[in-house]
Image (cartoon, rainbow, N blue to C red; front, side):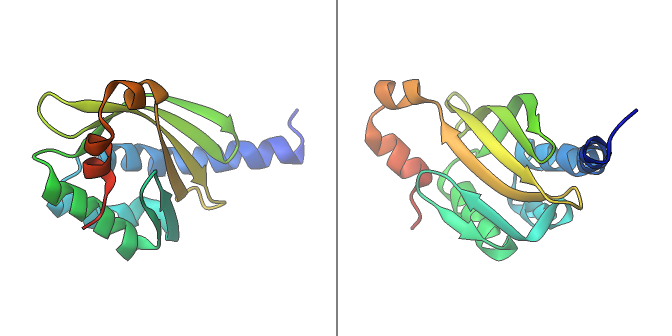
Length: 145
């Protein structure tokens, strides 16, 4: 028998599954036409953070993705694994693909709202990448402008 906290957790995870699947599909198929689709699976006050950007709300987050799509021949994600940390935090493991032959390992921490939608997206670039690649590539990849 579940207690109320377990039922709440199960309900959030169940509500989140559809939004989470949509969000992963969004990341893996990212293109200029699909950028607005982020609104379907995320909260209006979505926050986004990586090593260079910190954005709040759909418009700011969409602008980050548009900027990156404009700078690179390809900019999308390949998600290989998802792991729930608790009832409202999930980690995605994968790569950011930014050309036909180049990618960066990434871990994405997603926070899930009570409605099941994505509330925040925080990216962590795997450390070995920093040691192997010149900093200028990372700056070009994430810098706005």
